[in-house]
Structure formats: structure tokens, C-alpha cells
Amino acid sequence: MDCRRIRELVLTDLADGELNENMRREVAEHIGSCASCEEFRRTVSEKALGVFRMAHRQEPPAYLWSRIREKVVSGASRRQGALDRFIEAIGSIFSALGRLPKPALVFAATGVVIIALVMARPLIRDHAANIYLAEQAEFMARLDTAESNGNNFFDIEVRTGTENFL
Amino acid sequence: MIVRARNGDIAAFEDIYRATSAFVYNVALRVTNNSNDADEVTQDVFVKVHRSLGSFAFRSSFKTWIYRIAANTAINHAKASARHRNRKVEYDPEIHDIEAPDLTRGPLEREDAEKAIRSLLGELGPDQRACIVLREIEGLDYRTIAKMLSIKINTVRSRLKRAREHLAALGRKG
Image (cartoon, rainbow over all chains, first blue to last red; front, top):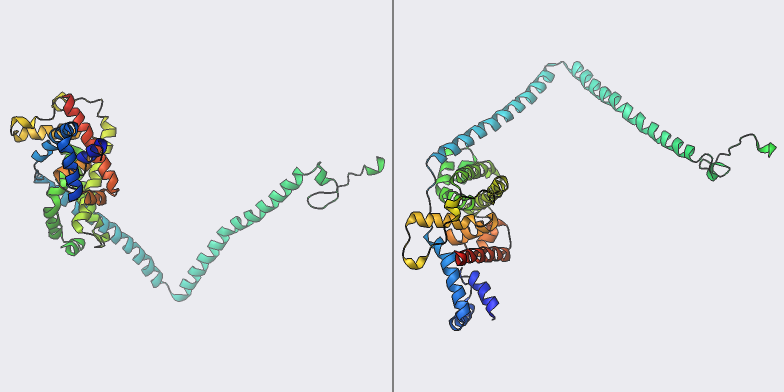
């Protein structure tokens, strides 16, 4: 292994105990015989690793749990409240419908279907109109071109009435 | 305990908090490098955990699941704070002028060590800082760190390598 590879391992796997026994021995042998790599290992150990060994765990502040508890409890109540209101609204719609006599219920349902169809009609009609308009636009675009003079898009002969004078 | 907490038992949720808050808080503190941000991140983590209890499928360790939320929430918060504060512009001489301690001179006072740690972590970006914290301070191995951060093991390795190169270079200048 060359010095570059050794230094990579010093910065990573060697420092973190991730090397197997054979690799660890090989790296140690190289460092033992290479002053430059030994110097590098020492610098990394002192300046980049050593200080973190002095780190101690801090206890979370006591007030944190009460703040979390408050957020969790109020959040759960808000979600439950919204869900309850939604269920209540659906329930009241169905109970209002349930109070209607059957014929009235059938009439109301039929009315909803008819209204839906009527509201959809313009959309259906507009679609057909759009197709028609698109065809006409294309036809108009081909007027006064070779296509419209006896060889046009709609296979319609265009007579201007002046043919007999030419 | 998890099932009871999921069903709304707040005492069960408090047990979960007591069992995991030290890790969550310390990761939050070290990754954000700021105690106010650490408070906020810790609260966010446990609110998220509470909301997501219903979706925890028992396919992985519960602790690993919480720690993953903690690490990622802390990193995202640190990145957002760094963008907002533009920390290269704000220069705090009290933090930046403290060089890495000379360990050959004997044991450091706890406070000095804390200042030195904060100073060194402040030199790193959030991604590198998270890897250093999880490896050096929390003692996790590469595989666990990779799982928590949803990155490859080689990415853990390269982030640690770059972080330590940077810290070693700072130490040589000082």
C-alpha cells in the first residue's frame, strides 16, 4: 500500500475501527516504518479526533417535555375536532335526507341527476362546435391555394363563375 | 408501549420520550451547534414521532426510526439556518479564534473542551458535521450512520475523510 492509501485509511477506517485484523496490521507496519505517515497519523489524532473524546452528553432541559406534551395534546385535539365536525356534517346531511318521504327522496335524486346533465350539456355542445369550427378554419386556410381549386380538402369544386371567360 | 402511545396514551409517549430524548437532544445540539436550535429541533422531532406513530410498521428498530428522524431533522434545520444566517459573514471571534486544544499539555477543563468542540464543529458543513457527531460522539459504526442518513457507506467514509482533513489542516495552521 502506498502512502496516499495509508493516509486515507488513517482518516477513516483505521480511526474508526473498521479495518479487519490483516489490514490493521499492514497499516500499522507501514506507519511504523514511514516517518511522514507517522507524523500525519499523530496530527490527525491530536487535531481532528482527540478533542471529540472529551465530549460529554448533555441532558435535555426539563422544560422540553412540557412543551412537547402541550404541542402533541393540542395537535391531537385539533385533528380530532376537525374529524368530528366532518363526520357530524355528513351525518346531518344523511339524516335530513332520511326524514324526507320516499317519493320526495326519489324526486330529489332525479332532480340532482337532471341538473348534472343540464350543466354538462354546454360542455358536450361546445366540444362538437369546436370540432366544426376547426374543420371550417382548415377549409378556409386552403381557399385560394392549389388544394381549393379542384383538388381541395373537402373534395368540393370551387366555381367562381368566371371560367367561361378565360 | 408503542401501541399504547399510538392509541393516545400520553404517559406511554412520555416513556418513549424519556428513553430516547438524550440521544435526540445531543444529536440536535451537536449538529445545529446551537442550544436554541437544539430545543426547537428536539420538539419538532417528537411532534413528528407522535404524528407518525400510526405509520410505524415495526419493520425496523423503533429507536433507529426515531434516531433517523432526529438526524435528518437536525441536518435540515442546520442547513436552513446556515442559508438564513450566512454564517461566513457573521464572525464571532470568541468561537473562531479558539484553536484545537493541545492535548499534550494535559487534561482540559470541561468548559474548554466544550468550546473547542463547538469551534471545530462550527468549521464543518451540516452533512460532514452530522457524520462526525454520529461517529465520534455517538459512537455509531459506518453501516448504522449510512442507514440513518439514507446514504451509502462510502459517502459516510468520504464525509468523515473530508471533515478530518479540514480539521487537521486547521490545527496545523493554529
